[in-house]
Length: 109
Image (tube, rainbow, N blue to C red):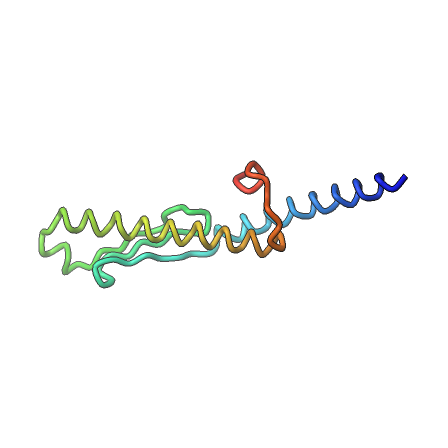
């Protein structure tokens, strides 16, 4: 029967891919990306898992008392950092799985 070895090969490949995705997810926690707004006056840093790590606001911006502008710049910087983190994660997982499409439940675990 030729189906047995092929099925075993698929199972081995699946387990290897699961291991690779887990390894990549662990590594993503140590990688960071940033998003800046206001010409660099507000900077947000997120890790590769999409978790916000830090927000830095230029003291000159705070001294101006422009609360609404600061809030808008923070939201923009955070959104940009998270968008970049999601792209980083997708790129790393795609590389680790040689571009094979991953089932949704495995890719998001």
